[in-house]
Length: 199
Image (tube, rainbow, N blue to C red):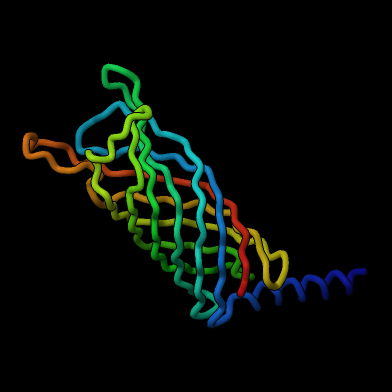
């Protein structure tokens, strides 16, 4: 029994290592729960909004420790605030990340990633009212995250990860009538699960 257990553990370890070799390509559809808020150069009494995000990553491995990750994500960002009345603003983005991914641990189950993203604004609503004309159509962000992959099969795994984004660009369009307009950026965090498909 002990012998069978050791052989099984060895085979499981080899499966874990065999996935992350040079030239390996992975597709990772994900879904998760996100929290976002505005960060402004002036103090605001804002509360975060909680939303669902989904999309897909693609990882290309250079070796068993390093890969580059991109993909396409549907993300809703925004804030809740009181400005005379209670308002909820939701900004819907199509986001393309470009991340460097470091895989570590004895079986390379862990990954730590950092990079940048480009988001394209699809819609913007404040308590159901269309306010897209007040927002820039693109945003740039600094992205970072950590995740863990459960290797279930040689060609399939389950990813659980945390991803964060700090906006680098002003989401509001500049106004010629207000030279003291504050700079406002998005702060975004999500916890996700996804399937890892090795091609």
